[in-house]
Amino acid sequence: MAYFRSRQDGELERAVVDYRTGGISRRSFVRRAMALGVSAGMAGALATAWSGKALARSTSTSPAPDGEYDYIVVGTGSAGAACVHQLARSGARVLVLEAGRNDDLEEVHDSRLWGASLGTDATKFFETLPSVHTDGRTHMWPRGNVLGGTSALNAMVFARGHRTDYDNWASMGATGWSFEEVLPYFMELETFEPGGENRGDSGPLFVSQPEDGLKHEGAIAFMNACSDLGFEETPSFNTARMSGQAWVDFNIRDQRRQSSATAFLRPVMDRDNVTVFTDAPVQRLNFDGTRCTGVTYLHDGEPVTVNAQNEVVLSAGAIDSPRLLMVSGVGIAEDLSALGIDVVADLPVGVGLQDHVLGAGVNYEATGPVPVSHYNHSEVYMWERSDSSLRSPDMIALYVSVPFASSGHTLDYEHGYCILSGVATPQSRGYVKLASADIAAAPIVESNYLAEEQDWRSYRAATELCREIGASDHYADFRAREALPQKDGALTDAEWREFLSASVNTYFHPTSTCQIGRVVDPELKVMGIEGLRVADASVMPHITTSNTNAPTMMIGWRAGSMIAAR
Image 1 (cartoon, helix red, strand yellow):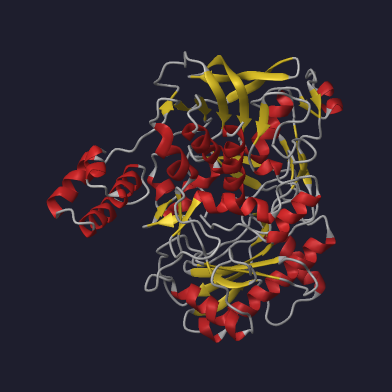
Image 2: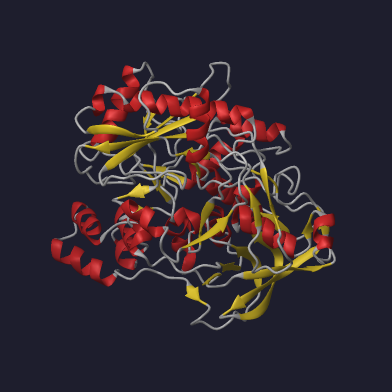
């Protein structure tokens, strides 16, 4: 990189980093380099020279670690990678253990292929218990089994949430986590390319919006339909006003996903003080009394124990973090004892699970092939209130340029699109429990969707709103028919209940199983335990109004900042 430093060309250096980490394509790199004054021949030569992606070490091909570490971070998802970025910059010796594979799959990096990534070994699935309020169906919850965790699989919507989310956290025992206190961390981690007040301009995560000329025609129709219904467009749902239809902020750059691995992990992976292993599932946390001393994980299938001189940071997600805690003796004492697990700390681990409800929404057969999205198939969102007295939005509506249905419905046509509904502020809570003391056994996951009547009201109101949007004349040229709910005119209460029950899907947003104030303190330290923190979506006292990727990145970034400052 000395060539770039001698030219004092930070923009070109950033382009090289983007290209090496998979953040932009070869063509985009060459264009950017030429725009910065590099000849076409030199730009092509540089692209060839820097074509390799820095990959983590797999335990199947690399020897076990033989050094000492200040910190061990378990998991490289939205929070884990952000935390590692901060720890690496502090100079600390960090071992990072990812249970899944490397992210060298095009399905991960091409923003249009995220649906296809769910069919690869980058994804693992948890199955919930049969749900009373969703026709007794179980729900398959996909989670990342790859460098970058679920941030490598999701639809890349970057939404911070409503300011009341964080103010409510602070009132629930998460002292220091109010909106004004977390805002600086959101700003630090991002570079928001359009710019604006309270937005970051120098962070490692690139956040953008759809470009004029590349916006999907169905998304344009959505925005116009919402305006016709009297709703006010907002320039970004990450501004002071979250409500209203908006072109999404997403972690996409040049059609390339900005996962947590791309943004946070790869820029520090080559440092001498950072060791990253994939294919390294952690089996248990190790304790000396009530101090966490390290972990035991599988290195090429064989158990290896490594110690952390300072701390272990658990960032395995809202299912695997509580599961690993419970298997290791941290959880509800009565439940652990019943499974023959020695109790290290009696804490309500696994209690309070939440996920947003994503409905099948309103599906339409199209008059012909629907154009392929340049981005992520869902370029527009709306958060709104079903009742003006609510402090924050409780409804979600979004246009998706491909058909979408739950296991409770089938679609009988080739070309279609949909307007999906969701519950932004669910009140229902479930839990995660162990089925056995064996870490390899699938956990018990109770989603408890729609257990609270308020969730039903929000869900129905959101779906009725989606139906109004979809009926707009702005869709007339490519709307052949309404395929779901397949009912002309108004639905009765019973018909709505039947349709909505069969329509429930996961929104891919499990949270709140190791809550601040109940399991961890405001510094994310596990209560009653030394040397152990949890930093991921599990620590949220209540799920955010928004998609959870951005808040979870903020949690990891802030955790790394707190630890590095100790």
